[in-house]
Image 1 (cartoon, helix red, strand yellow):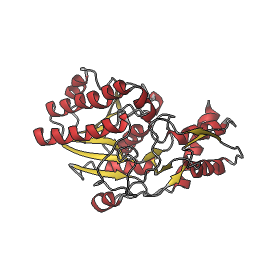
Image 2 (cartoon, rainbow, N blue to C red):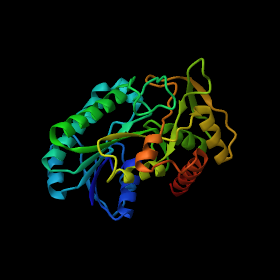
Image 3 (tube, rainbow, N blue to C red):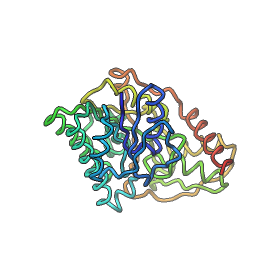
Length: 313
């Protein structure tokens, strides 16, 4: 199978590309390298440096003739979506539509769309939150991801284009950058390796910080492989169904690094949700997927990767 991965030089997309290659698939990557890193690319992929909004995307589809499109390319920062809503819409809506138009034109069998379980439900009243809970997005990023899901439903209804939506919890792991929903992990690790104090953002009535569902990138990769031939026209939460406060996360990272540094405290940022935790029972029932890595195991591997990178720099 030939798989075209948009955003395939990024944190998660590059891990998905590696796994697809290991599974015996051909991989084509489209990435403008605005947040992706060329160093993340496996030498075995066919790479096009291109913005997903570019009309030249048509030429890539025509030349490569992929079977499946895995759409990871996105504007990934929730705070930035609040301050730059036009940019978020241009990338996360218009960019997606350009991808979908090419999928229809070039007879793509299926699109795997990466959405956000960490932001799309807003301040939910149900925890763990299931896929049936009505989305109540409270940031431009989440609004546009939900709009993207509806575009997929339209293209399926109108053109028969199959899709699967993966609503990620807060993904962390090696190659992570400071932006994105779980960028806090890389921020904490990088600052602590420099013996600097990171900041824990919190609401005044909840000094332990935000509550999140942190899922390790290797588990997320397994979900992407699982939906290559399953889960068509369905939405799946991809998370651990476990809650972790920012303070708990900080202490876990601190322990792995063997450091004793007190964090700074700061007010919650625009777009920050108080709580997010996903029910993953549908993914287990229909895909046979559930997370393997504990938070501690994932943090251990992540910290090791950042240490090695620092030693090489």
